[in-house]
Length: 77
View 1 (cartoon, rainbow, N blue to C red):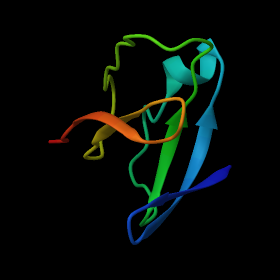
View 2 (spheres, rainbow, N blue to C red):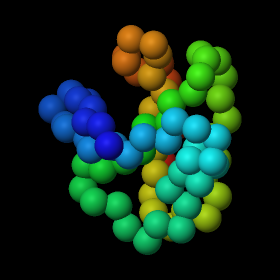
View 3 (spheres, rainbow, N blue to C red):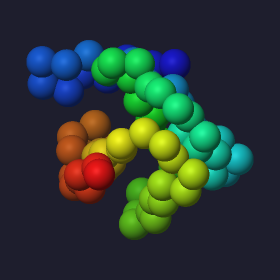
View 4 (cartoon, one colour):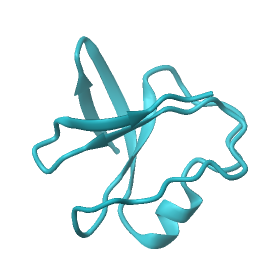
């Protein structure tokens, strides 16, 4: 677990830092606490594909660069 600052928000994020954790992500979750999320950590910078298979909660994705600044996003459904 780690904490991320996003403007005026503090997000408590689970960390997915290996292939099995990244593949599982937030699948099969029926709920997510307010200001909670998941941080996906990759071994190297690059274009990484994200999918939302078997997710029952609305999700948004923010891509961060090495410095932790937002480099892009994919608004949720």
